Amino acid sequence: MESFNQKIALENTNVTLYIKREDLLHPLISGNKYRKLKYNLDQAQKENKSVLLTFGGAFSNHILAVAAAGKEHGFKTIGIIRGEELKDKINENPTLQKASELGMVFDFVTREAYRNKNDSAFIELLSNKFGDFYLLPEGGTNDLAVQGCEEILTEDDAAFDYVCCAVGTGGTISGIINCSKSSQQVLGFPALKGDFLKEDICSFAKNKNWELISDYHFGGYAKVSVELIHFINEFYQKYKVPLDPIYTGKMVFGVLDLIKKKKFSNNAKILMIHTGGLQGIAGMNNSLRQKKLTEIIIND
Image 1 (cartoon, rainbow, N blue to C red):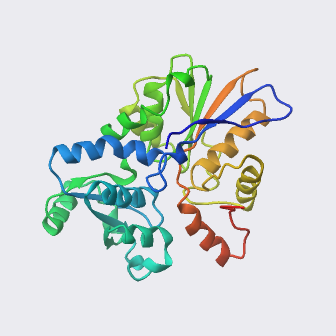
Image 2 (image 1 turned 30 degrees about the vertical axis):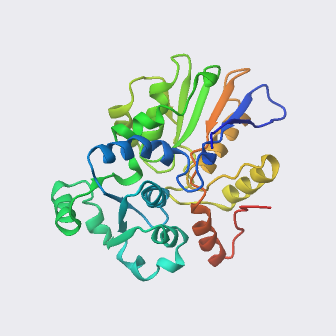
């Protein structure tokens, strides 16, 4: 499928708002993961690699996307998963269960060991254990991933004044920055606390027309609130656009809040990027159910 720009009709404002439905690119290799993997899969084939190895947490969009891409393109897949305690809970975890069904083999490591995921000594240990593989970093961000994300914006998007997206590891926004027009302002909404992402983005981004809006992480990565869940459900009922609670839901909440606070220029044209990640809703709903909180609506 192709993504398209869906208008979000707003009242009592002169701002024009659209959302780019990258979530519709593929049922499992969703949104920005589809973009990030595109050229990495090409490179893995060029290098005659038959195995993809990567890293992720319990409900990682990236883990499931790599498993699905491996199944679709004929690669074996290995997931190094943060948290030894998850080893016996695969069937309780919708993300890991689906990735396993798609053929991914897991190696569960302690959180302490997982912190070494970028160290050459740790990678060498993995090579000794699993043999030859094509390495994909956590979240999928590398030069080839950024190249794929540079294809998110098209010439049809040149009329927008602002382009907004959620930020995880910085690869998606870097690609968007690189393919944006100099007249456009790119706004990133980090899903994590802290300012450390700026350095990562600067290492990939070629332009300076961007800034991070750090006020809408709702307490940090994978943290949500009753207010956010209510917003996501209301947005779905009104516009029939499902939002994930980790990334895009927070970004859309932030953009609408900034519009309400009149932070955008008069008659501004704003494009929000839906980066997918809807598979994570099932796991989030399991958690919300246990806490006896309202769940996220995933269909009518």
